[in-house]
Image (tube, rainbow, N blue to C red; front, top):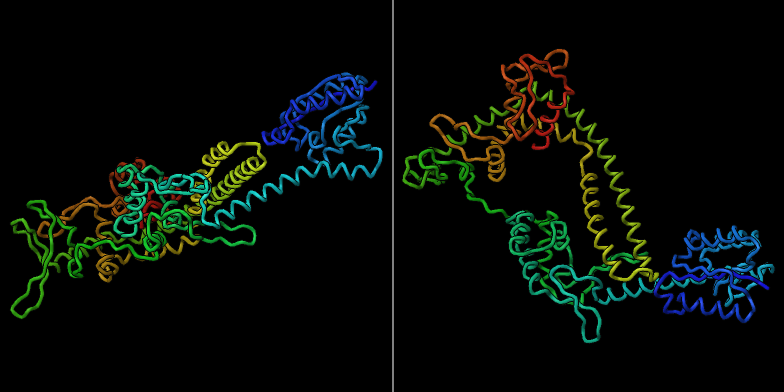
Amino acid sequence: MKKAILYIRVSTDEQAERGHSLAYQEDKLLKYCALKNIEVVKLFREDHSAKTFERPQFIELLQFIKKNKGNANLLLFIKWDRFSRNTGDAYGMISTLNKMNVEPQAIEQPLDLNIPENKIMLAFYLASPEVENDRRALNVIAGMRRARKDGRFLGKAPYGFLNKRDEQDKPILIPDPTGAPLVKEAFEEVAKGVKPVFHVYQELKQKGFKPSKNSFWTILINPLYYGGLLVTSYKDEVAEVVKGKHPAIISKELYESVQDVLYNRKRPNYALKTKDEELPLRGSLKCKQCGATLTGSASKNWQKKKYYYYHCQHGCNERYKAEKGAEWTLIELIKMKPTDEFVALMKQVNSDVFRTNEGNKKLEIEKKSVEIEKIQTRLTNAQQLLLDGKIDIDDYKEMKSKFEPEMLKLKQDLTLYKSTDENMATYLEHTLEMLQNIDKYYAEADLSLKTTLISSIFPEKLIFNEINYRTQIMNPAVSLIYKLNADFSAKKNGLFRIKSKKSSCVTRPGFEPRLTVPKTAVLPLHHQAIRAQIYSLHIFF
């Protein structure tokens, strides 16, 4: 009398629907054994994939056979895809079982493996389920692409839309009464080019806008909001934007205007307080009597020649010629010109700093690339599990919502690292040249550049004290030039010596950590504190 071990396996709900449930398999195997007068020695139930034999119950099955040699001579299952879905592994396991005097056999697909030609049929039985899964996956992808090309959005509705069903019970998007107005306002404000994108985002957050900063950028470049639908590239098919079946929240013209602003095709139209080239300081000066901002205007003499003045509009006697203002400004800028020693220090430190940073950048690029590849593999595996029916759509969406933001952040970081210019030394040379000729640069600049330069150097408004400008708070990087100009002198051996009595090579608190250096201390060029401060100047300029 033959003795058999029964093995039943199921891995998905889809298989259960097709008649492969554990109960169904057990019933079929027990009836077969009863009909064939086969004694059932042991029954193993498995709920793992058949891609490999690293399955808990199958491993236990092999251990049982080894411990109970001769107690069973058959291993029965209903079909070969319950045994394995990998042809190579299946042949190897069949050989292993035969060595233990156990014959594997599928009751619904019986094969005499002693006949060589039957191995061809075995390969077919093992491969056909995998081919079926691959075909189903291709059909799902084709169906999804066909739906998108028809203009139908699939998946969770993005911010500003809601998921609904149309009369044919097909998915469709409709504008969200709460989010759509905020999305429209976002596009309108960014298109104006008056406020930075981040400021627009902050204002919308106060009004109830929920997406993150990264999602805000994604919204601004998504054609979905003007009624389009992006169909991504696939194999030989190129990406395209088709007309969607959902209503638009904004016009296509507004969308294009936003893209011009985001990608610098359209220069932001920031409003200037004045268009008079002769009054570049208007808005940057403060009345020393009342503290109000000085304005500027022109007066005409009897020959109708214009003379420009800065003056207060609050009844004060504060008034002086624009020519004087320009003269005092140039005097202040000349004070900021770095000494030759300072320029030499910057050049030497730059070489060390950027050599170190370049190595760190390469390591970060490699690290980010590996992380992106891992997440991409996880997303691909999750999609395959969904197509195989091994996870449901809710689990897939949860995994996708977890991994996609990580992927976006990593790609943005990678783009930032790769966008760093390799030839930073060229830019440094240009920056140093500009600093050494900052008075000429200012004199030849247009109104916009003059205004930007003054506001960058002096965060607070200037006050004139009849001779020159009062000492004002400067940008920390500019203050550092003053300090290093005064405190460092070059030595022939390539080092720099502090000349001041105080340790003034350190910037104000908050800009860099304090460094206490005794009088006449000698600082080698590779000193970390000096290097960090000089590098901060390079970033600013």
